[in-house]
Structure formats: structure tokens, C-alpha cells
Image (tube, rainbow, N blue to C red; front, side):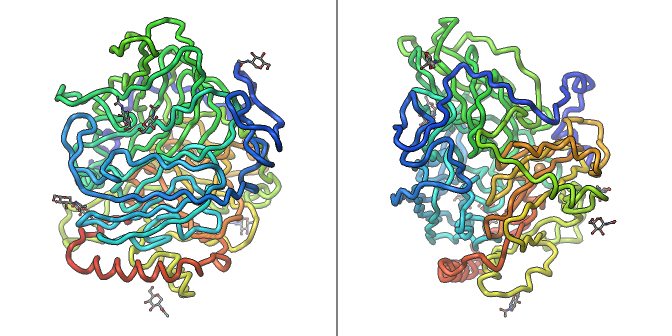
Length: 612
Ligand SMILES: *[C@@H]1O[C@H](CO)[C@@H](O)[C@H](O)[C@H]1NC(C)=O
Ligand SMILES: *[C@@H]1O[C@H](CO)[C@@H](O)[C@H](O)[C@H]1NC(C)=O
Ligand SMILES: *[C@@H]1O[C@H](CO)[C@@H](O)[C@H](O)[C@H]1NC(C)=O
Ligand SMILES: *[C@@H]1O[C@H](CO)[C@@H](O)[C@H](O)[C@H]1NC(C)=O
Ligand SMILES: *[C@@H]1O[C@H](CO)[C@@H](O)[C@H](O)[C@H]1NC(C)=O
Ligand SMILES: *[C@@H]1O[C@H](CO)[C@@H](O)[C@H](O)[C@H]1NC(C)=O
Ligand SMILES: *[C@@H]1O[C@H](CO)[C@@H](O)[C@H](O)[C@H]1NC(C)=O
Ligand SMILES: *[C@@H]1O[C@H](CO)[C@@H](O)[C@H](O)[C@H]1NC(C)=O
Ligand SMILES: [Cu+2]
């Protein structure tokens, strides 16, 4: 009964749906279609500029593999972020929010490729801890700065401050957010730009453009409703932090971006939602996609692009205003199977040409639109990097039994973290991976055990720990989805290689994939998409690979905030013996002591979920 409710609340099983689902090519072939100039083969000596975006500086350019080489600028960029509890009006309706430096979204953190970042986070809330994660930053040799409470640190208690230090070894667009349960849903979110080269030229960088679902209730109330009866419908959708509201209350406006005719723009699209996945477009303008997450790709054109939670697409478009309308709608549409939103208008923000009065656009949407709740399939990395097919065959070619992560649930369980376990009305949804829901211990993060050389944590099943002791080998993961809801899977510490995924077959379950000598051919080993979030299709499967080249404790989880709260995650403990804890041990101990004493002091809310 309740599982049925869960289903209907997060999926629409329209009979017509099946007819519009396209089949996905398993091996996309790349045909360059960009009309924009690509600056190839640039290296030392050329200067980065509007007609030479492939250049960077010194020996670094778009041809540099940022996974193995990056500049050391010697520059440290510093930011101070303070989290406060206050009332804001993103769409005109008052909401009690938890925000950064009094603003929502938080400040755009900007640095150059190779810079060091030093970011101080002060918790000025009263009743919650927090920890700040820098999404997509791989934290080379700095895994203790990944900001995942219960894995890489203890939460920062109210009144305390913690400084995160890491180098921007990658470049592109991203975001940062709290990893303390689903707290970021109340506003602890901001975007990041790491300036670097790109695979096509443009004139002007418009900056980041976060798109998110938005709930009028406190995220703590929405999260508790989600675990009882499935994800509730969002009240609205915000673009760059603003929106009109559907009730026609005052103080509402569309976010507006000015354009100058003839210029080519870079727009950094970022899905910062807790539950929704979107298709987005700008009327009368075609996007050229140049980067996915932190990975530059061969440019391709698209009128609509898909963004799962956590994903970024850097796109270019030229303000060529063929229709001469002056104002154009930017559109974002929540996709069936990718969450629900009361705002179904699609027209969510405005782009305005200089010399034209700002007005509600009369522009029309491109009809080159196919609904989808699965990844873009034309993402070909610009730097060619193959994955060892031989190694995959050795591991999976015989019986497919290795490294399978079976995502099952949601099953209804008595919440073991609540006091009133006898009360069956408190049965909550929990997801399992290979039968276990992740549940971290805020007071005993994995890295604390490592720094104390205390191995007892390895026996704690609910930490969902997978050890990867060998250096520089391929780790392959076949992820199976035993339920008709898609999950955006996010990995910390690496850009993974997406070797393949089942077609989008909702609502028909596909048989669990078992790889044999024959069907391994269907995977892409040549130059697969690399990124840090990929969709696990509903009822389907996803195959990921990464190299064990970054010692640390790395979370991999569903980025639907309700789902990771309900246990959908694992930790990879990569090359534990090489994790450098020396620089953080004193800090970690001090912060953990402060956390424990505050947590047991009566001011904290209860921990009644995974903690993530
Ligand atoms: C691309 O570069 C060529 C040669 O420099 C130039 O003639 C052409 O106009 C450029 N195209 C665009 C779209 O900028
Ligand atoms: C925010 O303030 C409200 C009103 O004072 C309070 O009820 C709530 O607990 C505070 N939230 C946090 C996380 O401190
Ligand atoms: C979104 O807002 C940020 C912060 O104000 C700004 O830097 C950026 O340019 C805006 N993005 C667009 C596309 O207008
Ligand atoms: C657009 O969003 C940015 C970031 O929130 C904000 O600074 C700016 O004021 C907004 N502009 C409008 C017109 O809403
Ligand atoms: C599957 O193959 C692996 C390696 O080839 C082997 O270690 C394992 O025992 C096999 N499992 C089964 C169930 O046959
Ligand atoms: C190791 O961790 C466990 C908690 O899992 C704790 O009970 C034990 O005291 C620790 N051992 C040492 C030597 O600190
Ligand atoms: C995954 O788990 C579900 C639920 O326990 C089970 O029905 C299914 O057979 C499992 N699938 C695989 C491939 O192990
Ligand atoms: C966080 O603060 C909210 C609002 O005060 C409260 O409802 C919730 O229980 C707190 N959660 C934790 C884990 O402290
Ligand atoms: Cu999920």
C-alpha cells in the first residue's frame, strides 16, 4: 500500500510514456557539429582570450589532462562563509532558511585552475551541526577536506569554525553544499567557478546558473514526510535563487540576464536540487555543450539538455536573436520519473537583449524536445582516455559476480534510530545496497578511525564500506536497480568513467545484467564519458569505473537528498594505508571533541537517518 503510494508520488505511469521513450545507443559515435571554433593543439606561449579559449598559461592548455597535471599558481584564494538561520523570500513567500553570508544562494566561489582555496565555515545556527562539501572537487591528497560528516570529519557544532584547504586541480563549474542530512534543502548551497581553458571560443562568461526545486516547509519536515510516504511535490523551482510564486504574492520576479547582440556567451548550468531532474533550454538559441561536470568534452549542439541533481553542463550560445523579440524564456521542466514540482510552467527566467525593454517574453519553445530522466548521451571527453577492457573481462567475463552493487528498496522498516520503535506508524522507507542501508556515525567518522589506526570500524556493517587496497588499478562497479525509480549516482574523490547503462525502460523491469564474453562488447571502453554524477536508470543498470589513484574515504551515493538520508550510499576506502592524516589529526580531534560535547548537550535535534 505505502510502497504503491511512494511509486505514484514519484512516477507517472502514463500509458503514453512508453511511446515517447527513445532507445539509447549504447556506443554513441561522435560527429563534430559545432559551428564554433575549437582551439586545438595549443600549448605553451599562447594567451587565453575570447578567440583562444583553448589556451591557458605556461605549459597548460585544454590539451592538458587535468587528472595528471595541473598548474601550481602559488596563489591562495580565501573565503569566509557563515551559516545563519533567517527568513528570506526567494520567490516572494517567506521561508525560514539556513543560508550562507545572509544570502541565497551563497557567494559564488571563484578561483583559477591550480589555485589553492582556503574556506572558513562558521556555524552560527542554534540547533544543527553542519559540514561543507565541494561537489566534484577530487581532493587529491586532501580527502580530509571533502566535508562529509561521518566519513571525513565530525560535523561543525554551533559556534565553531572550520577551515577547509584544497587545491583546484580541475577547472569548470560546480557547487558546494552542506552534507549534514538534507540540510542543504533549506539553503546551505552556493556555486563555484574554477577558471580554465575550454574546447570552444566565447566572448563573455555569464557565470553560474543554479536550478533547484524549492519547498516552503522546512527541509526537516519534508524529509520526514518523504521517508513516510515518498518524496513530496516541490512548491516551486528557483533559477539563480529567484522565481515568481504561483500564488501571485508580492515581491516576486524572474531572474533576468542581459545579452548583447552578436556576442557568444558561456552559461554554467548547475542542478542544485534535492529531488528534481530537469530538461532545460533557451528559446530561439541553440546550446553548444563544451563541458560536463569538471570534464571538457567535444562540443555538440542541442536545443534541450538534461541535468540530473549535481550535474553541470557548461554551454555556449550566440545572441543572434533571429526572431528579434528582445526577450526570451529560459525553460526548465521537471521530468517524469525525476521528481515532481507544482511549478509546471516551464518558463522560469528571462534573457533580455540590450536596447529592448524588459518584458514577459512571447518566445516559443524549441520542439526538439524528448522527455527524459536519463543522461545526455553525446558526452565525448576531449582528452581521450580509454579503460582497460581486458581488466573488465578478467573480472566479469566468466560469471559476472564481481563488484555488483544491488540497489534495492525502498523497504519499510521501523526506524532503528528512533526511541518509539514499537510504534508501527513510524515505519520509514530505507534503501539498501547489497542488503545494507548506510548509516554513518557523526562522532566517529571513517578518517578518525584511520588516524587512530583503530580497525574496528571495518566490522560495522552499516558503514557500507568497500575496501580498495591496491594502488592504480581499475575499480569496476556494476550497479543494479531493483526498483522503477532512477537515481543520480554521485562519486566523491574521482571523475568516474561511465562504461554503459541500460536503456531507459521504465516501467518495464530489465533482467539483472550479467556480463559474459559476448555482451561486454556493448560497453564503451574507448573514450567513455567521465563525470561525477550519472543516472542509474529506473529498473536498470549502470557500469562505472575509476582508477585507484587517490587515497581516501570516498562516499558514493544517490544525490536525491531524501534517498541518501534513507540509506542509499556506500563508502570506498581507497588505499587506506596511504591516507595522509598527519595534517588533520589535531584539527579532527579538536572538532570531534567539540561536536561530541555539543551534541550531547541537549541543543541538537535527533539523528534519525543516515546522517548524510
Ligand atoms: C573561425 O575561425 C576562422 C579562421 O580564423 C574564421 O574565418 C571564422 O569566422 C571563425 N568562425 C567563427 C564562428 O568564429
Ligand atoms: C532557526 O530558528 C528557529 C526559530 O528560532 C528555530 O526554531 C530553529 O531551531 C532554528 N534552526 C536551527 C537549525 O538552528
Ligand atoms: C547568477 O547570479 C550570480 C550571483 O549574483 C551571478 O554572478 C551570475 O552572473 C548570475 N547568472 C546569470 C546567468 O545571470
Ligand atoms: C538573479 O539571481 C542573482 C543571484 O541570486 C541575483 O543576485 C540577482 O539579483 C537576480 N536578478 C534578478 C533580476 O532576479
Ligand atoms: C566467479 O569468478 C571469479 C573470478 O573469475 C571467481 O573468483 C569466483 O569464485 C566465481 N564465482 C562463482 C560463483 O562462480
Ligand atoms: C576503536 O573504536 C571503537 C568504536 O568502534 C571503540 O569502542 C574502541 O575503544 C576504539 N579502540 C581504541 C583503541 O581506541
Ligand atoms: C537485488 O536485491 C533484490 C531485493 O533483495 C532482489 O530481489 C534481487 O534479486 C537482487 N538482484 C540482484 C541482481 O542481486
Ligand atoms: C536541525 O534543525 C531543525 C530545525 O530546528 C530541527 O528540526 C532538526 O531536528 C535538527 N536536526 C538535527 C539533526 O539536529
Ligand atoms: Cu535515489
